[in-house]
Length: 178
Image 1: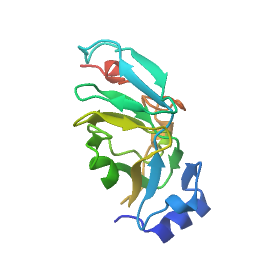
Image 2 (image 1 turned 180 degrees about the vertical axis):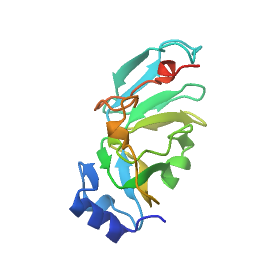
Image 3 (image 1 turned 90 degrees about the vertical axis):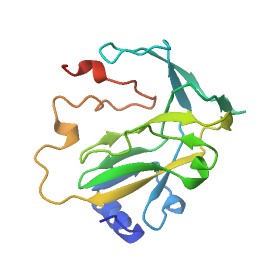
């Protein structure tokens, strides 16, 4: 089940959902709109290796915007820091974003119970498109968890994305054993 606007507000009041900055006008019927942060990143190498720590270069989106180009993976970040202590958060693109040909995540739209951070976005586009820091980029929806959670994400020793950040974070696949 997906939380309604009233339930999201109740959970915010209880502290089981944290959104900062928070503005009531971004609360939808069953979602909360998040915005593109001011930092993007791209990988330094065109060929990535899943077993290696692929390095990225961060840059700030200028006031006049930044043009995304097809064929490049951009890592973005949400302005909003979130915490989710009792629900499973999902990040989905907004329809207005999708209608510009922008995808905001390749595969990682689901968070874990206990995820406490900004969201790194895996951004790609169908054609060149100018984007701006602060633009609405996605929406968070929250699912009810069935059963008790044994270990929250922010308490896992092997959680790769626990460090609080305001910049996009590169893939940590290289930390896996395979």
